[in-house]
Every structure is written in C-alpha cells, then in structure tokens.
Image: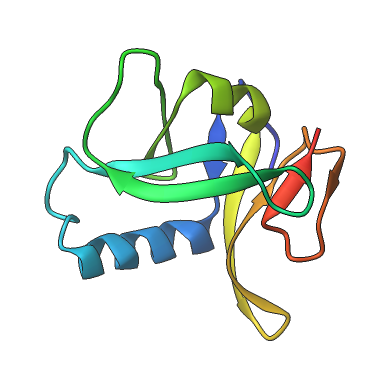
Length: 116
C-alpha cells in the first residue's frame, strides 16, 4: 500500500469481511451505516483498536472512503490512525481484523494493541 494522502485504508480481504458482517447485522442495505474505527486506552501496549458499525457522524469526525467502504473516526483517534490499513486474516496463526499502522512504535503479540 502506498499512501497518496492522509487517510485510513481498507484491504480487499477486510472489505469482504466488513460487507459480510454488515449483511449479518442487517445494515448492508442502509447507506447511512458505516464502519467506525477508533483508538481507546488499554491493552498490553497501552492503546487498543475499536471497530463498530454506526450511522451517526459527529461534528469532529473524519470521514474516508476506501475500496468501497466508508470509514469514520473521531479526530483524536485519527491522529493515531493516519495512513493505517485495516486488513483481515483468516489464517491458522490468527483470525480477525488487524491494523498495519505506520505510526505504531511497537505492538503486542496479539496485534490488538499498540504504542506510539
């Protein structure tokens, strides 16, 4: 992935999984719904990623669209997530979403938390 501008990016595998989960949640036909990505305190490295579906954009939210997926994050989280790619793995060494975050100085073994 080569970042052309500051954003949040979505891999093809992550796109497929997000679409499937939105379908399972019954919100795939509602264009108001999007993927909300955030950073919260916690985890073994100090900061953890948070993913959810939402349909309400708040005043300070940053809105992106990549690979057909609308991604929204709050401004504070975006400072940690700039040029991060959301990916998905269904391999034997771990299943689930993970982030390729160029801003992280270190991340934990489980890949669910990081430090800057």
